[in-house]
Structure formats: structure tokens, C-alpha cells
Length: 562
Image (tube, rainbow, N blue to C red; front, side, top):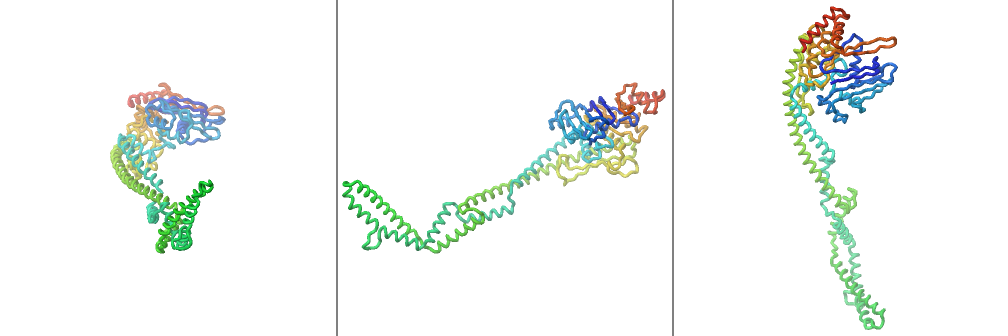
């Protein structure tokens, strides 16, 4: 609730400090006294657009601040906690505007954006009148006012939880789609590429053996001739006069061994010849084995050539070395396996999403039924109050429609609109197109009273609520304002004595004109002061008769409005 307002160098106000109290406070004063300045100051503190025209002429800057008591305002305290701006029993809004039109905003001493102060301001104050804070004409506000007085918080919580679960699965699906870069078409292509590669043994050893065998067979007759020549030199396989290398080595060794004791070099030579004879024998065996293994099969050579050609084609196609085809195959296997897991997970998430959407729709339907019932009751109550407020024959309807195909939201699938006819014979239509500013204020008052003051922690400010009314309607407005402020706080700028007398407190605004400038002053009236001010409001001038009438009205209001 609003506790204190400070204004410095704002419009025609040099400095002003106002204390506010719980209950209903009437703000009165002559036309042009400056009552709108107070509302304008509060509007700027709640995030209205600023400009240099608000700065008092000759001053460097205007400064505004408002202190609110928020122990009972759960939403405001939660907002402050989330924003790390403090959440004790008080909340201080402050705003400055320099002569150039630049403004700065603060919450509890911390600089904030205008958007932040607007967000918090909506949780602290509701201003009903022809200004930017008239939220009643907005669909979101109409839905909120229905829910605030509905008494179905459990259903709202169920819908919010169901929406959160649905949103969580949607996010998981979106993340999966972003991480999975393989489409169904791409997956089929990967499988085709893998099938091509899996036709071959792509291990490095297998490819090396394939290449070696191909090169051996390609050498053909030349290789066979070389093997035969080598074998013949080592050990002739036909009876000829020529002896082979092995035989010559053995003959030489036999002749020299008897002389080893006579000369060390002969001993060394014999040792080396002996090793050479052994190596030559092994080399001869290897040459014979190689010759036996050599199979000059043209069909085998053709097969190897085709296989190597296919591997070369795959190597060029995938731009890797032939010995890297095995690694490529392994990567394809992993990609396909991962895609398979993604497809399975996608199916599981889609099934889960369908289930959670169904749960959400069921919760939204339950909330819709509660809203329909409450909207009917509230519409009838507001229509009855409209008759008391000078709109006899008027019709008020909170129309609740369910959109079963709507995108899930934390507020359910309902759309709420206010349809009214403020006067008999006028076809019902949207609130913002049918009602005048004064009618909007009175309708807002009726809604607040019909809603049983579910939002008592928010300060209610009514501007122009008495526009175009008088008599019993004015009395009804005053009584409803006092009723609304029970346990809470309501401020009303009024020109009507019938409204002012119902207030628990009365704040008088006066403008004093000097030689070079005008200033605004205020005072919280005591009982005698209220009699004088009510008398002025009744007749425009003070007299014993107007004072007596004022005292009569105050006494009657105290009895009737308690």
C-alpha cells in the first residue's frame, strides 16, 4: 500500500511530501488546483513516459519517490526477490527527470529500466481512468481480473504445471532436432555408402596383402625367370659341368679348414664363409618356396585388378587414402547407429509429448469450467452494481471462450472478453469501444467490489470516477469506494461531495498563485477541515447553510458507510 509520496521540482510543485493511510482517501480541491499533478507523479513512478515538460521551470531536474508497504503483497515481494532488488517490508520507487528530458529510475536504491519499474508498478497500483494504466480494456487484464477473484488457484496451478511439463518435452525435441544433423534421406544415403564399403575387407593388412599379390601376379613371367635364374646360380638343378655358389662355398671351406690353426685371418675367413654358406642355403630354400607359391593365373590377376580399381574409386569418391577406407567405414557405422538412437528417442519424445498435451488439455478444460461458472456469477454482480452507479439497464458480460487448438500457455486455452452496454437500447460491444472514461472507471469499481477485494494489497486509484454523475449515483460511488477500501487502500480524485464524505481520509489540494509563479500545496484535513471543504464542494462558497449541509452529509455517510 502507498505510504508516502515525495515530489520535488515537478510541474508547478517546488516540493511536496504526502503521507497516505489505509482505507478510502478522497483527493479534493478546486478545478485546476493540481489534483492531476498527483496522479501524473504516480503515473511516472509507475513507468509512464517522461519528458522535459514535467520539470519545474528553472530547475535542473524533477525528482519523485513513493514508498509502499508490501508485507501482504506476495506478488510484489516475489518479483523483487527474483530481480534481486530486496524484498523487505517496504519498497521505494524513485524517478528523476532532468531538464533535457532524460530520466532515471530506481527501485530500493538500485538503478533499473523503465520496463522493470512498469512491471513492479502493475503489482503495486491500479489506476482506473483515461490514461495508460487503464488495463481493463486489455484481454490479458480481463483474464487476470477474472482469475484473481475466482477462487480456483488449484486449477490454475495444475494448468501451469501441465504446461511446464509439455514445454519441457517440446524443448527436448527441439534440442534433439538441432543436435541430429542426419535426416531420413541422409540416413538412407549413409547406409548406401556403408553397403559399398562393406563389400570389401578394408583392414590395412588386407589391403596391403591385396596390393602385394596383385603386383606379384602382374610381374608374371619376369618374376618366374628371375627366380629360376637365382636358383640356378645358387644350385643348378640340372647335371652340368658348372657348379653353384653353394657347392663352391662348401668346397672352399673344406680346403681351408686344415689351415685355420696356422693363420688367424684364415680362421676369420672360414667363419664368414661358413655363415655365408648357411645364408645361401636358406636363401635357396626361400627362392624355391616363392617359385612354388607363384601362381600365374590370369583370372586371379583380373579379379585382383578389378578389386583394386573398386577400392581406388571409393578412395577418390570419399577423398581419403585407400588405407583410410576402414576408418571411414567405422565412422559411417557410428553415424548410422547414432541416428538410429535419435530416431528411437524422437519417437519416445513424440509419444511423451502427445500424452503431456492431452494432460494439459484436460487441465485447461477443468479450468475453463471453473472460469465459466465464475464469469457468470461475476457478470450478474457487476451488472447489478452498474445500475447503482448510474448505468441502469446496462449489461456486463465476461465472455469466456475455449480454443481447443490454441497454443498451450500457463493460463490455459481460454479467451476472455468484456462485452457491455452501458445504457439501455445500446447494443452490447467491446468494453473499450462502448464505455466512456467515466463509465470505465465506474465499471472498474463495480468489478473490484464484485470480486470481493481479492487484490487488497494493491492500491486502487480512481480518476474521473464521478464524471457525469450526481445524486444517488454519486452516493453509490462513494459507498462502493469505501467498501472496496476495507482492509486495503483506495484513492479517488473527486469533485463530488457525496463521494468525498464516504472517505475515511480527505486530502485537499490547493494552488497558490504568486507574482511570478504558482505552487501547489496539500493538507490532510481534520474533521473541521473536512466540513469546510465539503461545504465548498457543495455550494462553491462557504456559508452557515453549506456548513450545516456538509456536516449532515458527513454524519450520514459515517452512519451509512460504516
